[in-house]
Image (cartoon, rainbow, N blue to C red; front, top):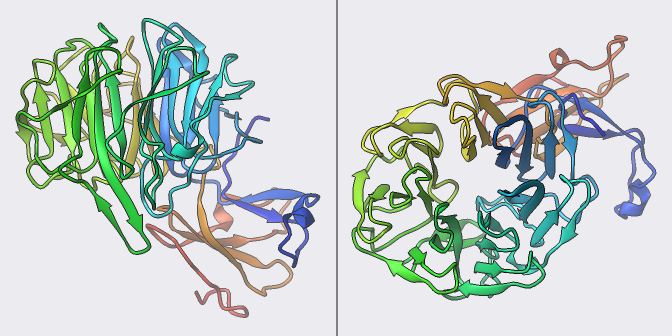
Length: 444
């Protein structure tokens, strides 16, 4: 099924009063809109040197693929066991092989959980579940550039309670079996993971304590930190020389063009951005700019230009770039939605960049100087939907995660059907709950 319009509300043709889902199975649904937005997207991944093929993993709307650069999209997980994506990884030796860690790892209170690792060997047509079901939230999946059967999984673990299935996991048989190789305790998980592309025996992991209660959360501890492995992820040592003692969520990335250079963006009162030029032995604080890690538990991540070790991108409330190894920064996310979660840079052409944010996805062909928003994916996450008593066609009002509150008609008399112009925005930001007066459609 190809989707060429975006919609955020599904409207049942008939009303149903029972709560048993079996009563809804034969109902026919139709899109009514609005069709001018995307929705929270956790990750985006492309095929190096192939501009047409891109995968988008969403917070709660499944996995999608385009083969024409975003003009149309195909849902790959339309009838899947989970619809929440944490990370997408393509086999460097064969891009038809896709690994997906399910369960969004951006741990806000509306996050959806997943059921482990999934793998496709035919470009997303069919899938096999590879286990690690109880990880629930997977931040990163890496496939070894030297061996397609070797992969690593970085799992945050359960959001609201301790559990043992978290940390870093290793497979050497294509996902048939897994070994947990980095584990601190049942409250600390893995927030990020990266591998030295020139020597895949060397990996870096960011370990993080996170636990959410109904009205608050705990992020960080003295046990949290950056760890390095020199034997393919089998054993690990903590790196401390120059890094903050008390650390929250962190992103760690190797510079592909200079693998001895490693960066860390972190949630900490002591600093936000660090650089090592000797594979993590020593770290130097580059900036304390809070915009680089503006809301650490929700986004503390970065990317390094594949051909320039001094050009670094910070993924935060705004998308930022530094061309001097993190000393100074400027915003490059103008005219795109805020709250960034993913960034993919084509290693063969660093001018081509895809971003993932709370409003969907966007693409740049000039290293992030300008962006084209791709708003044709139906990814809106509604907290609540309400209908009024207007006749003959009632209005539907709903509040979305970070995409405002919108109201529009259930039907219209025009032959063209419901258009974006029939919808109106009631409020901006997080929509949450919204109610319309049953007899006054202008009173909210």
